[in-house]
Length: 295
Image 1: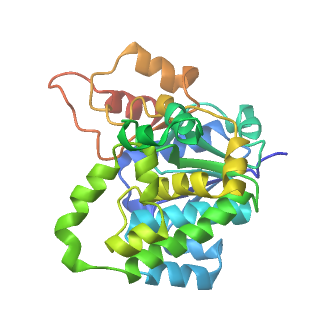
Image 2: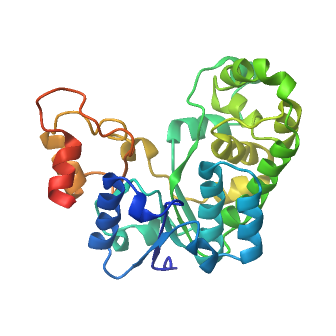
């Protein structure tokens, strides 16, 4: 199978208003993938690619932009296939060289491998599920790929929207003082955080945590055998490697950074458009070098 040659990127407010780092990242996808259509979506033109009724319901639901974007990325992959990349994801290697293999199961997302293995290891005793400390997420949401109608994107896009609407309909202002301590406690490990991705949790608490996309994904891995089987067939690739420079563009530029973003490291790097300010005075930053060479 070959992944449809579309790269979907989303900046709901419009790319003309996007930060300079976003403009640099967009150019990286166009430069490295000349045979692909790089489609820049906004709140206005996303309706050209997804059903109008679905978009009207989504934008009228009262969700913040990041949660709307999570639904849109899944819906795009489910309907059209291709690649979705966050607007501050930087492409270092042509997609043609790796994405068809990575998405050979029909779907692909980077994962936090150690946490993923720990969560899905049925031999871990229950007391360790409660007491162990691990990272709280198993999957990265900033880069997705797949074929149209693949099981994970199709199933998750529908169920995640339903979960968010359930949470909005169950708001409980009187419990506000308890929410943050409860959420903080359950972020202790991936098993506990997955409990926050259930309809029962968001209904009782009257709120969803910020990383609800990731916690809901983990919840389905634990509770839905078909979803778990589909994820088990996805080629594992490290999210940690792609996040290496995410919050460090303000550091002085070094040879490692130059080599890796010039094509010698991860095929994709997730940057952070808010983390570009210099962290040390007087030195040329990684961000400045990136803009000079690829901007």
